Amino acid sequence: MELRLNDKFGVEPTLGNLVWDWQETLAQHSDPGFAEKGQLTVTYLTEAHRAAAKQIAADMRECGFDSVEIDAVGNVVGRLDPAPPPSGGGLGWGRYLLTGSHYDTVRNGGKYDGRLGIFTPMACVRELARSGRRLPFGIEVVAFSEEEGQRYKATFLGSGALIGHFNPAWLDQKDAEGVTMREAMRNAGLPATIEAISALKRDPARYLGFVEVHIEQGPVLNELDIPLGIVTSINGGVRYQCEVNGMASHAGTTPMDRRRDAAVAVAELALYVEQRAARDGDSVGTIGMLQVPGGSINVVPGRCLFSLDLRAPRDPQRDALVADVLAKLAEICERRGLRHGVEETMRAAAAPSAPPWQQRWEQAVESLGVPLYRMPSGAGHDAMKLHEVMPQAMLFVRGQNSGISHNPLESTTSDDIQLAVLAFQHLLEQLAKEIR
Ligand SMILES: [Zn+2]
Image (cartoon, rainbow, N blue to C red):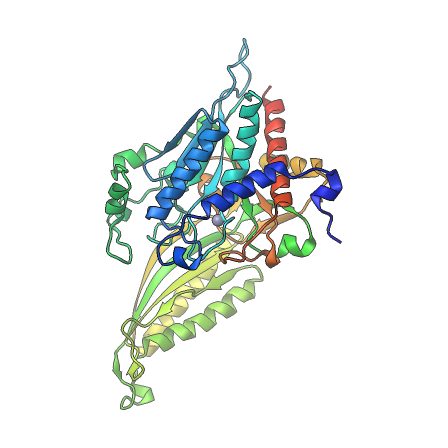
């Protein structure tokens, strides 16, 4: 039997409803080709993406943030400043809690991935502003412009910019239509200079830490019927774009033992990735994109392009997996007389939650009478980037429809969102007590 929040407390989830409405409004912006089909796709700096940023900025202003701006990489940054310090100081007074998540989406994705982590703290700031209250610390909510690596191979661009990880070569990278990132930025009215982007780097000393609320994107909380989950660690991941080159030749006249078939080599690798990742128990490996450019039904594939995505809860485990897979690729190509190339497009270290921050989430969840459930995150998140410079911890919100994500069926409920907002408010109050 499902216990609904309404039954439990006899109240409407007003803050959950508020966030729900923000999500719905934001989901109206979608890239051409998808919008017509009622699908949600928002990739970096498209018209829909820029409209989404404007929408978030407008919603933030309405919440009562002290400042709202769209920065040089398209992040929307809202700040609620701290209360003035008491006479005699106050330890740690005046720093900021950093929070947020991303507003870009995968192609034909869900409404909540990323966005829930922007709107949940926005609802908290709105409540503070409405009651004219300030805390001993400021709250900086960042809606990250790019996390999914869809239009450009620049995954975590938005959060990466805050820690000084922007690869200058990205500016010359082209999208599928041949538009460079520099052009896309200029088009969006952004400066598109390394100087402006480097200036976004935050001084960690000014921050207390980073917290991120995110929909779980998996089936665990749904199966357990628990609305919120405490994240213990984010799996480390590496991604590659790879290419194998053999010899395109006649499918009818080339005997099987004379072929240099690039696609078959990748098929052999795919089977190996499946077996090798499974051997670890909790590692995962995926070849999610595989194509034979210009291929024909009657031509032995001369070239094959593919992606590799390898993840594990600990870096050494992930690195061993990567080493084995790349060695296998080399061995397969050697044996089959093929050449291959590998380009690393993303590398993120595993990010264990900072214990004090994880404990704050645990207290918050317990205070709501929600059973504590701790779990690692199999998906990568913006928190992984911030992890490199400051303590971080994440809170998961249960997804509906067996927790499906990167899919239009991704969903949650106002009741669960309400609990996430209440947990966030509890974390803020707890922090205020600690600093006072
Ligand atoms: Zn996400």
